[in-house]
Length: 289
Length: 313
Image 1 (cartoon, rainbow over the protein chains, first blue to last red):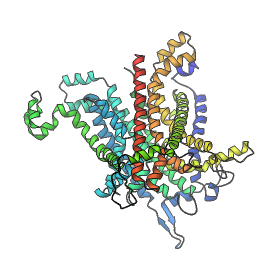
Image 2: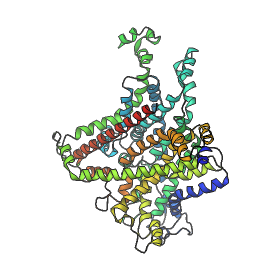
Image 3: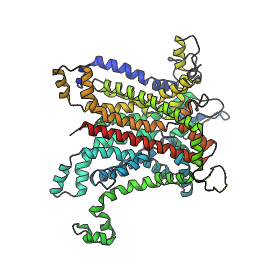
């Protein structure tokens, strides 16, 4: 056992085989969803469940085109717009939260106010509230201000959700930096702006990427607020997903699985590309001086 | 305000005068940097929170046009004397406790597995990270399908081993297990990421020293590895407890709180009160009680963590 912990170093292909089996088992439910996306309606609900079947692209087509029974022609659905909305809203709000949160985190780390911990705690508290509670006031507020159904409304709301943990995470990265280097730069006549952009930010880039990915994962799938606060033009994919559930014919698992699969692609690639940053970023706050 | 700025002789900005200079005064830089974040938080979070706090003292119903009247603490009284509330809290505690525990165990084991570098690690890691990227709606719908007695793969596999027909969601215990498994499956990777961060940060020379001393693997773990992952493990518990406390979508989709009310968590109970029975004010009162409990738990927890940290030094 001791050897296992000691060697954080290299392991060979044999180890890859073992971890792949474990990873595959863990991934199995996702795989099942992806397979369902390629199944016909009868195959999706076959008894016993089918692992091998003739794949069809029918579900993917019907994500974007709906066949009209009466005329026999196919009609485009708005799913393309919903995918754009999800990407636009998630990336903008997480980016905004990161910028605003980084500024605040820098202030909390470098210019501690009296009662600093109290402020930080209050900020964390805003994330503890069950969202259902604030929904009614937010709903009324959005209707009165005309923010309901607009991009800005939902973007600002998601930004607010992401700010608390952006501040907490980024602050932990700033706290780990060595302030002596910054002081030395100041002695050499560097302006505050320069210290911030040239010395602090580059050192925590990995941490910022990690925060961005975390925020993106949490925002990507938000459902409840999107359901109540987006309009026909600004609807996001999770809301559109839920709309496939209703109806007298029951859940169309194939169609739902196809949407889920397509919706997984963007976030999967962002996470894959930033994976090293994600791992290093989480590590950053823990390395002791 | 201008006075304040000119008083501060040590700053160059003040000499230029005007609002801009006052604003950019180094004394206020901290506050200035915090302002955008606080503004957004205030408008989108704190203000609605205060609004619903206010509502909790009235008898407002979102479904009725009647002008609400002030009721003082009666909403709180009714919620706290209702046996249902306490039952829902117990259910929530069971689900939160078992789910977080399972996430810690699974996340920890996965982290041990991925602490080594090995070929294709990036890709294998993605297999494990993917559940976190699914939406609650889809996890809920598909886990419900997996548990389905006739079409579900879980039921199919279980029926190979038992003669009796396997109905996962038929009993309260089974339904709770079904929810816990879905939630823990989705969020164990999050715990894994945090623990992994701790494992990687352990200096290797410590393990070499332990080997020279012929320390047992058990001792090596508790004296070397554990202290490094402890703080992150505690952070993981805090985050996951807060989030699981709010668990709604998965429960609502998989069991709708049933059978009976055996899996009705506080969040589902709140949703029912607020949007099915339109008891807006009473659910606001309940929500504040929930928030109060979460804050107390968090504080107790942070207190314990800080005391431990002090003892360690």
